[in-house]
Length: 155
Image 1 (cartoon, rainbow, N blue to C red):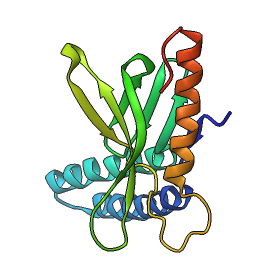
Image 2 (cartoon, rainbow, N blue to C red):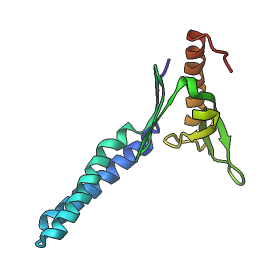
Image 3 (cartoon, rainbow, N blue to C red):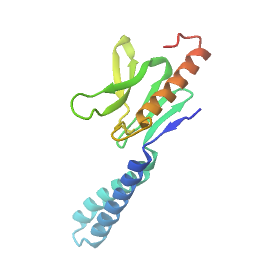
């Protein structure tokens, strides 16, 4: 069973953009005569290099302990026991973009939603399942398998 879902095209585009930005800003930092400016540009360049390394890892991963959602600026982990359902939330108006979401029950029983926006959910001009639909089907398979192993009711 598949355990990772990524929007490869956008991950590659982001990696290229971050690499070019990092290289340009590094060049600017090195060429600065003012040390304060050089340090400032150096910090920004370092952040861009970190972004270059982070970009290929963006996506959604099914792990034994739960779902790991890696976005550009944060990683969210949702334990299987917290998952209420995994579904597609439909937007309104025009060509309808879709976003896969995880509805989770957190501490105190409060239900929250985690949007899996690291995946491309836009199904314009597609004849097959969108990356979002494929991810939802796969994640629900992992969720049901986890629930079966732990004697929980499947949804």
